[in-house]
Image (cartoon, rainbow, N blue to C red; front, side):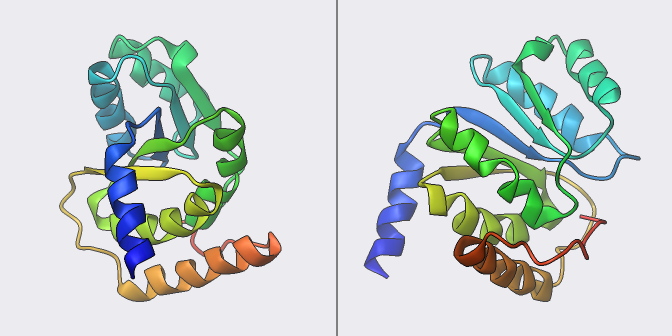
Length: 168
């Protein structure tokens, strides 16, 4: 328990060095638009986006917001939320990132936090959650438990356990 408290305090003290966005539905651009606005306030941070809208659309959203699209690191390898983290964590680590702002929808944040603690934490990367407001109810806790277990399996074996959560 003491270690958990230490990690929480450490995460609050380390200034994020990047913005990590978990892409959502390709039909909606809420996360991209929210992040573009957020990125204006954090003009020195690179923006890593896992999944979401097609590259052209995503670049357009950021360009319209006045964000230099050179800051964008777009990645489309993930098929589910666990893979949003596992496909990028080594890239973040290689880039020297020790802390990120984690952006996702408010209803999705509990699950993202569970996965982030495990996957990002396995590489010593902390995060500060930034929720995109929505009118959706939080996801069932069972999804957080399932993906927490999948994340632990990934840390132990490198296997993510499938792509059953394509709706993110």
